[in-house]
Image (cartoon, rainbow, N blue to C red; front, side, top):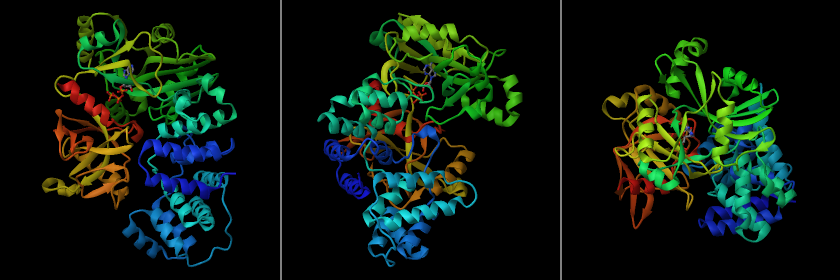
Length: 572
Ligand code: ATP
């Protein structure tokens, strides 16, 4: 039986380390101790969740309630808890300290195992309806009453959604492999399994039941896949040189949807794998009518005005929907889904089929009014590719996607199976999706909103750190400024995020949560920013400005420092 005290001791150890290899070994030792009925729970807790993101089950307790529970369990007043929190900047540290000095001896202290802790967390998450906050506080207080100070540190961080052990998904997968095989040889099949179901707890459980099952892991309806991602190149010629004759598709600037159907049941997942069916009743009805009994496909949703031959970006579509109402909009600017991939059909996993074959199925199956195959042509010459690119811009689209005809669906990976060419290349090198880690107050006219700018970081996947890449002061509308200020105030923190590498400090730090797309002129070498830092020099965005808030992207999907360096090299 895996005791939570052992788990907490390992978490404590992990926090003191930063090398990936070391962390993998420490974790592997822990995984060896876990049984088949514990590994899933342990993995979820390590990821800071209790169920996969698409389950909609979220622990999310607010700071105020956590403070109530800490006060109840420690015997200190709420004010004393708050005072200590102001000093420490971390409620996990606060509860640990206060429990060490615990005034009331708990009536009952028993050792907690991982399943007990997991079940309690599940109770906290699903408590709903009237009095649910009291219920949550009660459950958390009970847990803290049974916890040692060290255990409490991690329990509180977990319920606040701030566990952040500095252990990414790749390290967890490596450690499962090392625990079982003694080396990383099983990392690849484990990773593939994870990428096709986006549920690491489930993969770990299946693996513990039968390690071989991982090699035969199949795509299934209602287990969404991690989306495949595109690499970038800057000219048509480079694309043809790289993948030869390819399928060239329009790149639609809509909302990416992953649609699942089994019999009469339909679900739609966003790019972040959140459930979206409730937002698109019209699309759901159309999917229900598809002949296929079971199917998973992906497409881009956006409005199209056939008369004017004009596409509307998803943001514009949603804005108009709000303004004119869904029904009026649905008539005038009906929402289309341009289907660009098919991943599963009637019991058959298609992700390993070459793209050429998947494309043929798409062409046959999606010819409707709402669900349409994305526009695509076979191209073997750079001139032809350039022509299609220009055509896409003329129609108001973002550019094109070139697809390797022989490639499988590369779930969860950025690969040259898909290459994007966008209009900004050549002038500006694309955009960067970064996470906000801090903000500055406004000056002059902006003082009214008390909001002046943002400090943005990207992710270094080599060492698991966030690294700053830009300070943005422009590109916002007044409405966006107001909205952002409100959002950021709620997630202010006393100290910098734990895994952030930084040389400059903003006026306020915030929890890394909101992803924004940043436009810029080019990338320069910088002594201020830490992105991709080597010998005290990092990379930074020149003339950065906000393009939009990317609500559809999670912090796990932000641009990596390696990508910024690749963009810098493309620029040359
Ligand atoms: P960008 O910001 O350039 O849109 P991104 O970071 O959102 O990129 P990428 O994987 O780099 O994601 O670019 C691919 C995105 O383009 C997909 O996520 C999808 O939403 C969209 N897309 C539009 N048209 C297509 C198409 N025909 N095939 C594949 N993806 C498409």
